[in-house]
Length: 187
Image 1 (cartoon, helix red, strand yellow):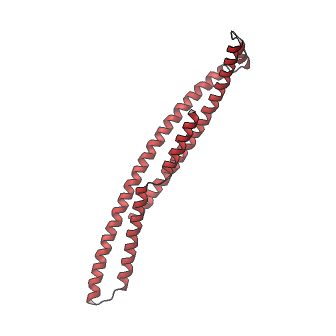
Image 2 (cartoon, rainbow, N blue to C red):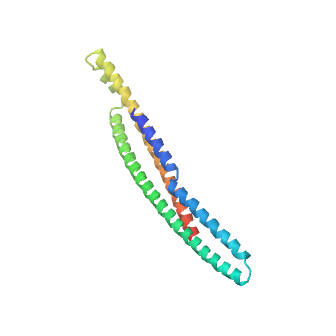
Image 3 (tube, one colour):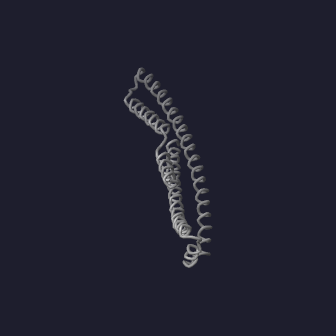
């Protein structure tokens, strides 16, 4: 049952962090619209002539272009802020997962040391045969089987945690590269 909850938690965490937040998508859309406005004003500027009316239109278009560029810069800054928040959350999640992984590794290491000390199959057989009655020997046999299953489960959980950490680190790198790309467009 614990394993099922762990798998459910892991899958939900991966899907939650695998998607961009709605706020970042909204900011990207607004930024694209603002960039389209800038392109449109550039086209309109090229079409104006040297008449007085056109000069006035050109001035208005330049003012509009300046406002559009300011809007683009503002949206880029907001987008960068959202990406910074995502990076911080990802770092916290990675640190948490690494601590869990360290704990699981430590527990697994202790259990493996314990099993190494008692590795002989004769020890297991003596443990089962030294029971007071048949029912107790069956319980001891079931205990040894469950303990072996638990160790396999611990090894699987360690591998799963390592995979999850790797995925989080890749997501963090992706977010960082998006941030760097945005910084490049801002300049």
